[in-house]
Image 1 (cartoon, rainbow, N blue to C red):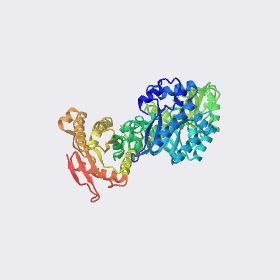
Image 2: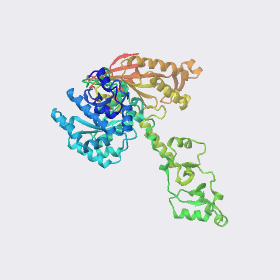
Image 3: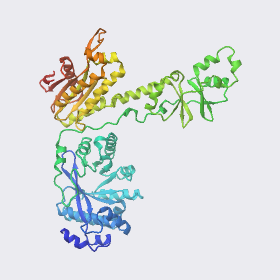
Image 4: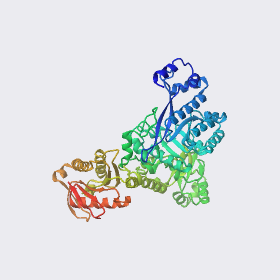
Length: 606
């Protein structure tokens, strides 16, 4: 029916019920695509209002239906229209139709779903091609009834999908109980996923759930090349969104050309990292020693008796109305108590006379970063005395300086495994994971291993603070001259960095990086040293000699598909290229790694 006919048929319609009765609904179909190869897996049916209709779009239409009390009738009419249009076009792939829990129960109760299945059979279409997509526009009041309804669908070999998971209305309980074949992830998590580390982690967590419950994920709302590349590389099997194809009256046989190019491209997304992973969820509560506290009126004799009862207590806290006001360290107290005549003079007097009345108090919810300032403060008494742990100002227990130093060190080591604490760039583990993804993808890429010439003398001469400034400068130069969505910058440690290039002009970028760093690094030398062209400092053998100004060496490993099988092999080869860059005295040393040689063979240098 052409638009003029639709307009004539609906111009005098005054209710949604009448629109449904006239069968004047329009159905559009949006493709759902396999991320592995870009083929069309199926379509989601979406209602549209006809030209001239008083309701301009689906939202207004369903709002009017709710006001009339005909929402379920409208939903079922949409399903019938979707099936008819899909069958008329050859019923290619799978068809996902939207139904609320209430509409599904109604369709089962009055036999409408059975009649739809009969329609499929008469057209020679398998029931497995139909998927009921459960929408969560309202809270599901009777989960048990919905579970029974979905079991009936499964017995009829109709697929079940859960729509908009994660939008605040869908529930994990519903997922676990109805066990849908497909779960569609709300578009919020897809938006800008390629630049949001938290969303990347959310997708990974949802993939684990999908594996547990046996479901396929669909990333909804894919609208950019970066989003498509990110969800593909995360391993999300199905994708949907305007970038792949907008809803249209006709079924699609192929996706948009730009989307097809992204999926065919061997380049992978540079997935963002969550910063300081090792510190997440860490708090001072880990340091808590369950220890009794004594009231402010406690005597020295009572404190001694308490230490006698608990040989494991490093200290005792004194509290007033559950709020700490003093700390007595075991070793110090026992030494005093053992002095001649101390017991006779002070035994029955308040122990607060010899307590530290300004103890260090830490809240149990304090994070690692909050404790760094404590660890580096000028008052270091707590390292031997320990400290008090509180919650909301009230006494909870004790902690020791030894515990704090160990816990902070361990947390920082764990954080450094993922992100370097100096530059906050990804560390060894993310670098390895990124290279492994490239190897699995079979993509050509280049790995540049960056190291500084004459950095140790600079660091020894000027001190670690200015040494750190030099390292941060290198990180800044690297980040400035790479293609953010194609090239991966990691910090191995010290002055060692790795850049994994997918950008085609990586050689020019490498030369620019070396030139820019060498020029800017000169500004970090004192004027006299700069005028002299370097500094006099000890070398690695302890001999004082002249060292030129710090410069950058890049050993670049050019990798063809299939050359390496593991990230460790790539790392070893890149390290060789770096050593040749440093010993040869060139800024950029390129090694074309192929199967015929295990040693670097320079193809270009600058």
